[in-house]
Amino acid sequence: MNTILQADQSLVLIVDDEPFIRTQLRLSLQCEGYQTAEAQDGREALTVFDQLHPDIVLLDAIMPDMDGFDCCTQLQSLDSGKNTPILMITGLEDQESVDRAFEVGAIDYVTKPIHWPVLRQRVRRLIQQSQLQQQLEAANRELQRLVTIDELTQVANRRRFEEYCAQEWQRMAREQLPLSLILCDVDFFKSYNDTYGHQAGDRCLQEIAKAIRNTVKRPADLVARYGGEEFVVILPTTNTEGAIVLAETICSAVKILAIPHRNSQVSSYVTISAGVSTEIPGTDSDFQAMITAADRALYQAKTEGRDRVKPYSKQSSSTIPIYPFLP
View 1 (spheres, rainbow, N blue to C red):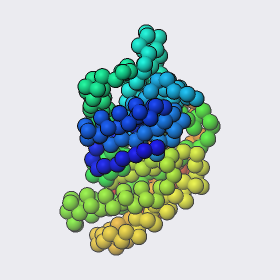
View 2: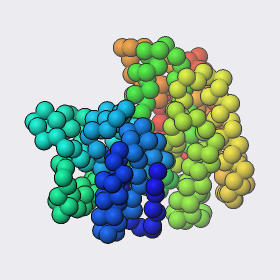
View 3: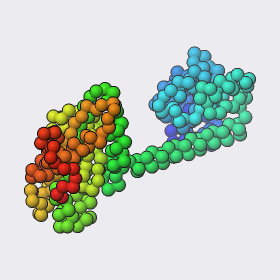
View 4: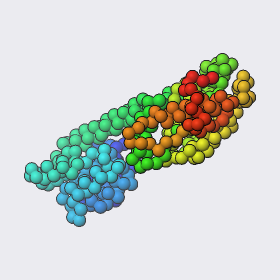
């Protein structure tokens, strides 16, 4: 393998079993300002590709051991190879070979003997197209992130919460496993805003969201802003006991922030209350009942003095109304 690395240049992987052809390609491409890496067969190409992640691959079709068609297929199967353009270089110009090159994932092809001006233009065009495609995908990912993230707190927003809750409800229904939900509310938040101002209130919510996010560790768990000063945590494959432990940990994490709240009636610092509900979903039901149950449990936590966690209980919650409750 021969590799030349320079800063801020596209990297071209040249794959050909003929040293003379590789040298010609390398010198031609370097004159155009590209970085180059070389492999002498398909197997080496896979190794080099995995190490260097080139911007484009120039791949000889006819090579011993693993030809360019098989190599192209394997490159396309790699996660890092799905968006990398492959330009096939072949001495075969029959219709079957051309069709096969495109079938295995090649973006374009040139024939030997190589027409160098054509090769340079195709390499430049394919790299530009690939870069534009990557920029478009990055922009789409950012757009998707923006429509699912709460701008103020940078946790999931209500829309994402409902989508994810429905998704996990169906998954837990298929597997007959418990799904738990923690609904949190900042105690006396209206009083906090009245005392310290809305900008301080925003900073308070940001700190609380960060504390909750840092407490919830599992990738499958989701933290979302439910609305105003309310946050919700979705916990797949979690029973009531596990959800209560996590809810209490979240409440403690918020206390540790020690955000002053001189007009709170339960503490000199900001606290939260939490309601917990757990369901093993049925296939003919939805998640709204679980939210209602957590809502009732949260109301109970508020009416019992705030700064606490309450699990939903049908007996104790039968007479408790759904929102509104005291701020």
